Length: 337
Image 1 (tube, rainbow, N blue to C red):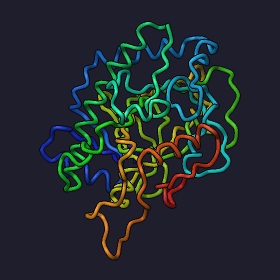
Image 2 (image 1 turned 120 degrees about the vertical axis):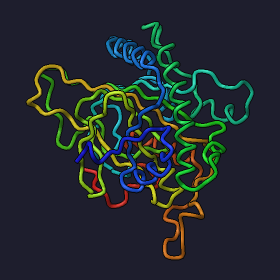
Image 3 (image 1 turned 180 degrees about the horizontal axis):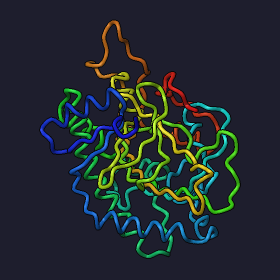
Image 4 (image 1 turned 120 degrees about the horizontal axis):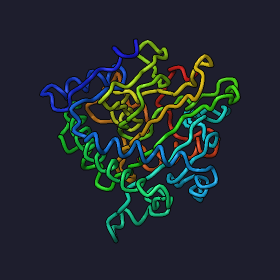
């Protein structure tokens, strides 16, 4: 069911808002084409990221942030467990390594940014080598900013809101890009019981744009409450909703529950999967509360109002500290294992 479950949408189709609404009501996951991201920018990002993950562990660990609240730098395999973000209180750590960046340049003296320079807008942590990494990731980040600007305008139209609704809540957005490497070396030990390459979770903000190798591993929960494999289409980006849209729309649109599973043991040799997730989480001081158009007397608000940054930080700290998150979960009664 995986391929047919995720609709392919042309971002410049006249009917894009209606198609997006239908996809977000059913599964919260879509594949977008006609995105205008140059292939040269993607190729440079892929090449530089591959070089980075080929560095020694000592060199990569030197890029670890000073605290779990700083979503920058390197995260080693086994240092996080994404299912803790759903309030799970015990889970094996995940089998991925990651390198995280935010905006590489911020407006000087802007109080909205300065207030979170120690945390949500912390400086990036760059290695000296490979030299190509910083320009390649910064260029790709800029393309993702442009793309998410288009997406959030279409989301607003799909919800019968003014096209600027989410733009106005993204004046100083929290945006993070996570370059991920999943790799099993020949002869590596079997995962422990229930251990995933990335545990089941929903994303925390407004929208995620994902580039990934066209190989198996990603799974999402469909409308039938079962896990389904999703392999990205060549030349397309996968897009999934985050918790803020579930909360704003009162679950008219559902934050997509997803995970990455280990390869079968029958897959011999080096088993690698690479992906890059760009998270657009909007303004940290935006109040996320049920839209008037998404509630009735028979359908009262399901989530209390929350500041976007408070939700984001509570979700982020759970996986980083391997403790159950205190943030509201949008997973409902969908399966997480």
